[in-house]
Length: 404
Length: 71
Image (cartoon, rainbow over all chains, first blue to last red; front, side):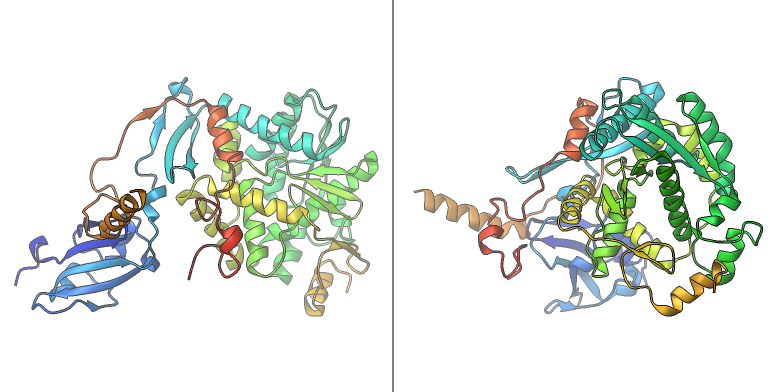
């Protein structure tokens, strides 16, 4: 019995835009073959043409190899919609010539979509650190000019990693808006603490005075006794298997607000980037919630601005590659299924359809800023929330901070 | 005259499913180089107008039952 390539059934991808033969590779399953050619399995209805003759019959066989399908002369993979999903393929991307080929730090796929001719062209651009910095500075300047009045005092949350470096760089390049930048870093968990020396170095570079909030002060933001168990221990005890980032984002916000009140300003910002804002919006829309306002979000008497909202992480990381690497080396794994899901969906979209994430971000931003979601002060918790906090969750949170 | 030409095109398009094409690049990847400034690439990325569902934006008229043309 022959099991070599000659005995493999032919595989034809049939679309209303044309038909193409695909070849099996060794003992791969049909799903592997589809993945190798970036053919979406959910868009197909599969028919088998029998070797014995007769009409093609429908067959669920994604998990089968060529040798499992000995009775098949041909597999017909029919696209079940008349679109051409390969229109946006990156396989034909052109590489954009680089002025400084020896100084490339990152790369990004760009796509030109032309509705008039119904065409898409893809370009792979290698970017030097200088090019990345000019890109980020331009995007940050646009957002600051649009969402912050001239001569504002801005409290900036930093971590000492690549994002905050790029953000501080971009903010300090903006010379004609009268912006005063007040960087702040908070301590309390090892990866935050590890960023402090880098944040100090950065702020010195930019001539900025860094505020360092020590763990006891961070605890006080939530009313936790100063000399009690650490933040991370409290969190892990009460919310085992969850990710500290959720509490972290609250603590950073409360710290920024506190500093802003001390300075008499209402403007704060953090380094949320393109993938971050779209992931949040995708989560919200897919769970029946309106996108929360971005890139400027009013929370109580404060406005949280997201100057990096149109900046992809790939380009941010190219600004100061050394700092990005150090930041990646100080990371905890994320275990929350939802956070993994929403980020993974967004990275897949961005990787398959570069440029579409920006369209999504801009569209969802418009939606979010029209009749925006509001936040109200929860007297019991001591900070602003958007929606009803179920009693059991509220109780656990209060137990964590030691107030129940 | 024009109508006749269009009907030939429609007929040709209908038969495309039987025409052998390379939708998925099966062999060599294109290595062509392009010359585009970073600012132009960034404009392409962040300032492009949203693509309408229909080439001519017909969803504005016909879309109450489905903006993206499912019948």
